Image 1 (cartoon, rainbow, N blue to C red):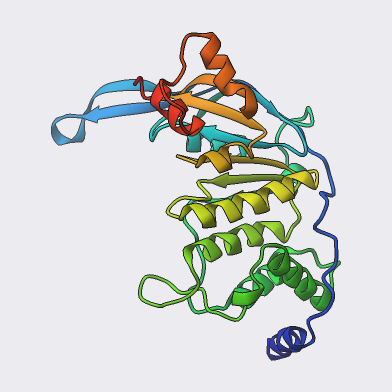
Image 2: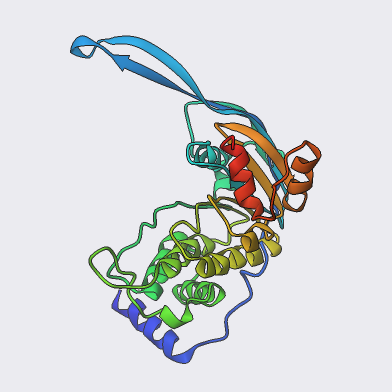
Length: 297
């Protein structure tokens, strides 16, 4: 371990040229989902814990869509609309009463596909006392295949740091609730970087801009847009993006109480609802207008 840390310090001093291995996806993945339905069983307990009533609640109600390599899909909707549930289902992490067809390049979910897939949760799970470099290097040492040497894994971590704009804070600790560290946007980019180390062809993100200011959110989505243009397929949930962010999405899926209200190109969503008699009275952020529709306002 001491030798590995010495390698990290030497690498920080030398600042080697960053390789271009992360500019393009190693494998193109088309994601297709048809009539996805998810149900949960709710039970009510009576006296002494005896179950007196069992109900079935439908969380997702027949959702269909397709995302191609190089595209970025944003799933919009109010809280409780089923965005995270659908994202988890598409990422192969949801069990239970899941119906419908989810395919990756026309095939079912498999271990080989799992190795080409990254998933960034809404809550960052990072060690507060490690620096940004240490976090990503240790992740590289653990997650990259044994065919890579230790030096190559460290270079991969440095590549991700540079690509995600973390160079200025790479020697700062992550921090936590009681320990001052990097900013919220930098923490989120570190979480994204942990998944980028395996160079995923398909990347899922749950609320990557949650709790961030508009400028920081813009930077993160811009990073994701660049990753998508390298041939990756990116799917994210996002609650209330600014108009600048909204126009960066190739496709939009609008959900309301588990039902799809719209799926298609983001640039055509306003024309679609206008043709159906729903148009804002004043110019406004398309995302705000869509959330108003999803909330029945």
